[in-house]
Image 1 (cartoon, one colour):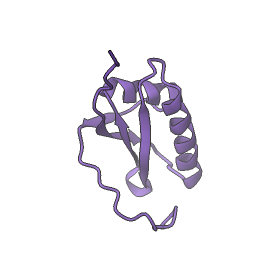
Image 2 (tube, one colour):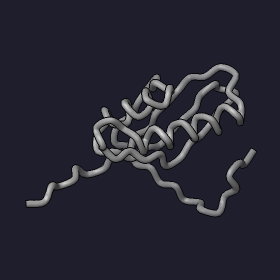
Image 3 (cartoon, helix red, strand yellow):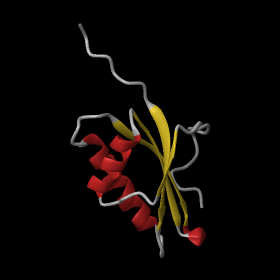
Image 4 (cartoon, one colour):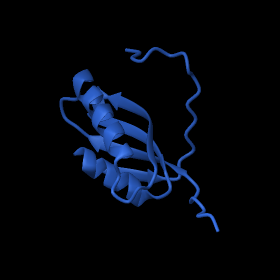
Length: 103
């Protein structure tokens, strides 16, 4: 009998970061993407999008995973423990042709 993969849900992670810069966002993306691929339990975690609000000192990440624990573990592994995690969001990334950075 084949193992059944649990369904993937979407999650919104929030980090409160003073002095948020473009370099810090690039570093977060690199580290979170790498950690997502290397979670200890082998659970699939994918970083779909990152949004930065430097004036509000907030960084947002949209992930898919089978459980919130997998997202939390991946973020800890990346060195970005989550300040707030919203479970089972409805994420719709609509504009595939938007430049990487729209400032």
